[in-house]
Amino acid sequence: SENLRIPPTISVSQGERIFVYVRQDLDFSAMYDDPVAEAMKEIKRERGYK
Image (tube, rainbow, N blue to C red; front, side, top):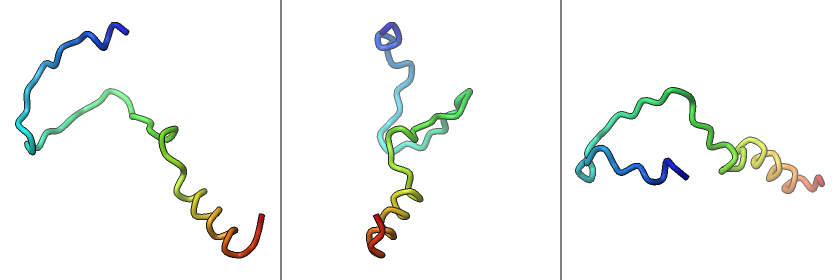
């Protein structure tokens, strides 16, 4: 894609604290299981529910 060819615009030393501001929320929910849903599955397994 076109965006992959943009070179880095800053250099920061490893371990340096930085702040990043974004224009809109970043949604990573598709990458991780919902912890509440996973906890409910575990409770149901422990209690013998299907």
